[in-house]
Image 1 (cartoon, rainbow, N blue to C red):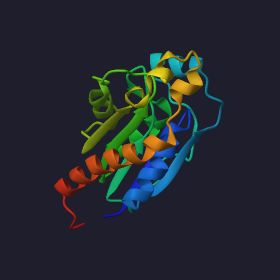
Image 2: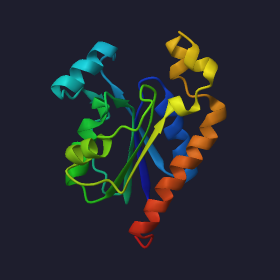
Image 3: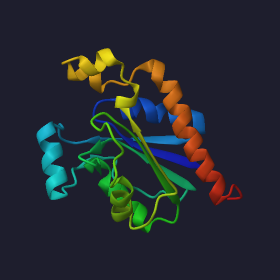
Length: 180
């Protein structure tokens, strides 16, 4: 089964995680970047007005892959806008797809995440794995006034999170069959 991870990261956490998961799953990886610098203000505007930023690389033919796994942050309960073009592409693609994320801002489950993903891709994902960085913060981190401390995935947690994401995805892959 040929796998591709398409990853966007604002803080670097999803980039670290996608690279680690790609290695674990023997998946190819595409890192999505934006043509303009991202700010908190542009995050809010993109989410409020459903804007899609210009990205690189633009979605291309993914027919060589059995499964495409999208990875990126959750902003205000929704998938980060730089991945929207890929979700549109997925809506017409024949491959199965999944999504995983490590988000820094949420302390609780992103309750509308699967609904947002279904709306963007016009079909269900075979798996959605929503990890919260807050679950891995120490009490000292939580008390810190430095957002950079709160927003950074610690390398000691990366292996555990990678195994958790990989296990959840592999379980779902086996449900769609390995005879492709």
